[in-house]
Image (cartoon, rainbow, N blue to C red; front, side, top):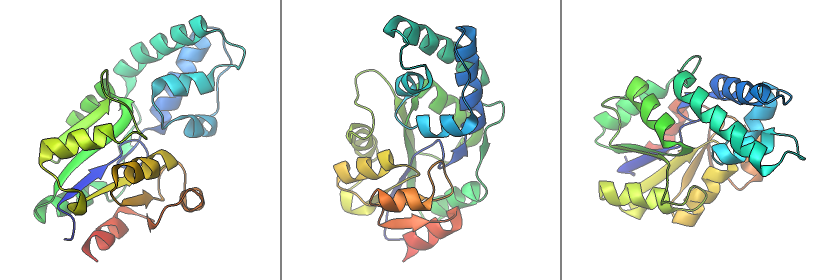
Length: 216
């Protein structure tokens, strides 16, 4: 294995969280008398943190105060419903097990609120990860490289032996800003064509292909 540390995005990479994100978004919107969004719309809204998700989901004319109310409602609801319909993508558990068996350190760096990251890690990946970092106060979120660097420092990871895996242009840019390679997860929220258009150099159609790329 040419890489000793493999860091993953969470939503759209390890877990299909779209149904629960869309459910929480529409609950928050309708609680404030705003129109619901389709699941496909929410697919394109996610990736840059909850505040940006809500800003994209509310009508353009919505006030900052209303956005904050919707944001607060989303967080309250999502904390209780982040795992109603969420599931790991096929092959993810096998990929993590193979990496652990090969002696790799594994971690998550996500723009998802840290409360959601930690809850889902506990539910799905107990014992499978060395670190997990979600959006939190005091550290810039992706595409800034700060969260990646924080996890790498915690793990004692070297740049030339670390790779990042994610499903969005934000992930590609984050890895670029950190000076490490990135594998685009084509099974996630954006798809192969989008990732290629945004500069992905390495692409995997499924988790099994990730393992093949890491072993080349």
